[in-house]
Length: 243
Image (cartoon, rainbow, N blue to C red):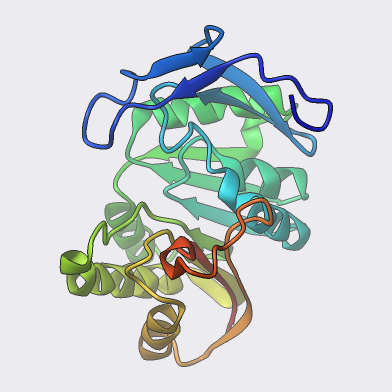
């Protein structure tokens, strides 16, 4: 028990690369899915087999930042997973939110999270497709969004993958900027410690010299950085003005 909170359940996840649901209960018997609240947003979380811990808690402050800037905007959320950024954008007054993810279960979970958060699904476009394919088709059709969020999975799980990852981030950033409306905003995230903040700034300068970086942030304040472990600064979130 810490600070008046009692730990009812504790689950240790399976090793990466194995079946993540093959974990161990250290306390209690945690259900496969729980419901959490983040401000007035509500999310179903698969604590046993979902990505990371089932929810990307480290992006909390960045979701709040998106919410503060979303009012009246058409928002595109790429690699949306279960809709963290999408839900907060909608609660922040976005005119419409388009959410894209290749995983059908993630899109299904997002649909449920809209209902949990009291949001009308008619204001949302949910698309189950590869993000690169979606961006290519959207550009061909001349579609544009006022705010584009690009939060992909790690392209660089190790140092060996760094160069190919930088190429993927560069292509993704260029494609995302191609569908960002003039005068719009663009957010790019990386969750790999092998890709640095300087790397992201450099690639943005190459693909979008018109970009002005408004803010650079990382993991939420409850993810402190150990001074002797710089790899712990894995999450980078760049929020930019375009044009």
